[in-house]
Amino acid sequence: MPASPIESDREARETLEHMRGGPGSVIVRHFRFDGKGAPTRFLILEIPPGAAEGSHVHYADDRNGTGAYEEFYYVISGRGLATLGDETYPVAAGDYWHAPLDMARGLANADPAEVLKVHLTVVLRDVAKAEPA
Image 1 (cartoon, rainbow, N blue to C red):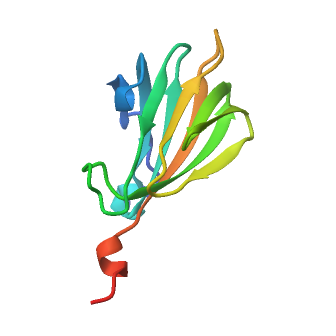
Image 2 (cartoon, helix red, strand yellow):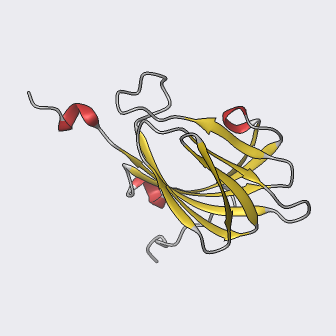
């Protein structure tokens, strides 16, 4: 019988303390697609009450070593506060947004009891290939 093409996230979870400098811990569920999705990655962030993904920037030239990533967020459940640039916006289930290169972004749980669950699509932009020779 051939190996199953179905993967499971049960083993692809990690808990990050102070993710990107934010308070508390965040559970990150990775969907790896056996490496076939590169340079795109799919994640689910589970952010408990009082926790946050801290504000951070992915630069096009990767000057801070975090990767030249655009990020696409979709709120599965819960309520939060999304930061884009210098602005903060309330978000809830069904909301989605794009965080482009060179713009600060962050996400905090705004609910005192419910976990904030967010699907995050991360796309690596290889700017070296995009620049003229």
